[in-house]
Image (cartoon, rainbow, N blue to C red; front, top):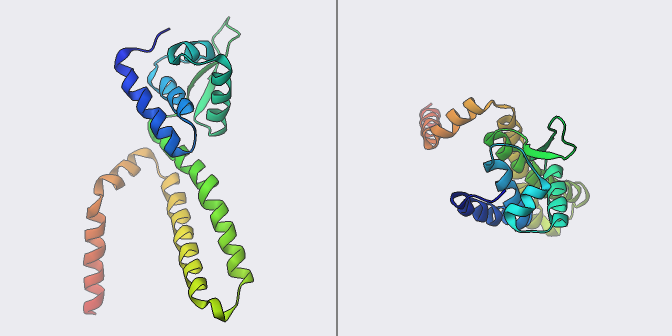
Length: 180
């Protein structure tokens, strides 16, 4: 099985994006192959399409499974594991955000919480204020993300399409409350 030429650009781009999302370029390319291939693919097919070692594929598949971005699929009469995306594009995007939150935001919040509980030094008042601001921002982000994560994809699309329209509604609300 060869990588179709028209998909090569997407695969390369997913590799670059994967490195920004928190996994390496090869794992990003493997995700692209799995997402853009209609039928589930096995490790040998992935290795062949990307011209990488079978061992590299095996490690990459474990990484993608740890991120919960792919699922194992079995074909009747075939003992090989085949892989397919673990949901729609929307679900994959939310899962990447969820994993980034778990790996980046949660440890930072934990540190901030411990700092807020332990440090009551008046000499560091300014620094403590900044720690509180960062904490409050990340807590707000977590609450917002939980709300977004519970939304169905259609509602989420509608919300995203509103874009700056939401800001305009909030501006109007603020102007009305100032007049009172």
